[in-house]
Picture 1 (cartoon, one colour):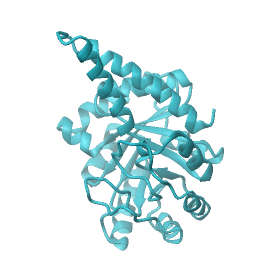
Picture 2 (cartoon, one colour):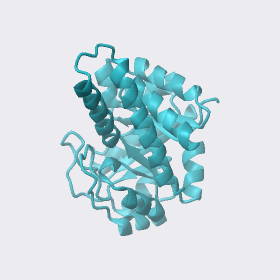
Picture 3 (cartoon, one colour):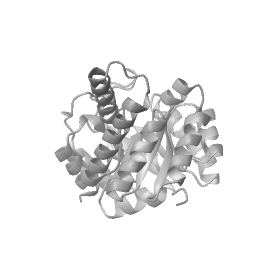
Length: 278
């Protein structure tokens, strides 16, 4: 199946008031697991590569091209997305490699500068047919850069989306990045107000901290793209640890990475069903 555009996955989900899972790729096994989970569920999925992961690999091309290859080999719709990029150069590289969407994060900047920087990126990406997500309000926990407790104002969000020309908007509604427990308290009333005010799909970052029931409520209230990373990383690492503890003399990494990949695939399939309401 050819690579699917992010818009062709997120747009119909928003129209149907359902959710789409966007899961972060750290290494090849993650990409394989996420796509395998989507194939199990027979639901579309988004592979995400973050700027932090790019730094880990020393460049975008190795992990980016691998993710694109896994996506193209899938038998369900898969899009490939650059997550939380603060570097315009990295965005341009992702566009050149064939990513279907990017998330440009200028939320640290004052409002007017955020709009100007994001608009420049949006114009460049749209000229190449690439979908753009931006952030307004501050999602807590991202390297300590964002202030917890900040919320996105619906009127400002509507104005920002129009001025920046973006295709989706990540909003701050109570979740936080890198949470190890699933007890975030979301503001569902605010999500509903944002859904009414903003004409583009809303994105929930920090969704690893949100339990299944509240994920479903968030989608019903108006969230469409739901980003999950830490939750899967915890499962991956726990499975590796259990395998190594059970077989301390194992030397072949396939003996512990393979089971971890399978565990993540099963959880991705389950989460996609939660988000899609099936």
